[in-house]
Image (cartoon, rainbow, N blue to C red; front, side):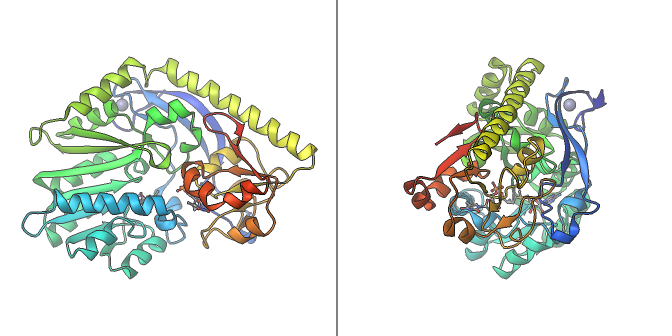
Length: 405
Ligand code: SAM
Ligand code: TMP
Ligand code: ZN
């Protein structure tokens, strides 16, 4: 047994996905030698209930000048963050000279709206590839990792913040103790820390095991987030569910005693407890379903290959690294993956070495079946690819179980 990264309690492993590559390290054909691998396994803490990876990947290997995930590639996500920003502008940012921070600001998807409104803001983003795109949009960015020392520098230069926001990033940070000490320095007395990440409740309900990969270190619940916040002198004061990225929760954290927790917090924790969300029994049951998905998906793809059908994948997501490597998919089962991101095109998927091609490669010669790796964007993608379906093409989904639509 190892120790919980959050509270030092005992960590029990409940699923092992085996040897996995860096999920966002798309390779040039001459980079196949010396690819980095680690053991992807997930466990749960018997004290604070936090789910977390058993092994940590060094942060610079994942988030650097080559990081290829550009948040603004999805119109649904652009809308989601525009609404988020507008909402902050109308509520928390109405005082005298307000200041908002975004941890993991990426290409400026949220802060662009804040910058356009002329409100003081700062993005903290270690990956230069995406930080430069945000800067070009007029967003102010520090190209570094957020942690205690950067928070102290920011307070010195810009003063304290009304809101620290973070989407799909806090779950990427193993060293949350340093982050919380930084927040303590950075937030005004009544300031709030608002973050949203994939919700363990949805991962278990939908068996969306591909949310588990190198970058996703923690899998939060309202209970584990409240325990974490309290251990650093904060409290969980609100929770809200969102359908984006397969099901997320937005957590609002404030200094202990500064704000009264909403009824939604107690309700969500009661719901989690009632279904035993973080118990070993539930999590091992989740693992059994994951194993069945692998068996079913491999059997389906082998059957289609035997029948001479063409199969390509849609969306070279970070999530798909887990699926492809865990199911041992390669170009012989999935001929290529189509993706709109130029930084991923004409490269090979990490570990599984499936070529990534442009959207035109898909539309010019549509396959019989498209394996939807970007299932979290299903609505947006299926609307865009109506012609594929109308011409007889079929989608393969593997969440919550393997099925064809
Ligand atoms: N917030 C955007 C969104 O929701 O679409 C981007 C999410 S992206 C999955 C995660 C981002 O967090 C990456 O741009 C990565 O470079 C950044 N990141 C990773 N560790 C970080 C840290 N310690 N501080 C700030 N950003 C970090
Ligand atoms: P995500 O699931 O982590 O957001 O990644 C989505 C990936 O899918 C990203 O590489 C962009 C790609 N994508 C497309 O290729 N076409 C699309 O229509 C959308 C929404 C995403
Ligand atoms: Zn713990």
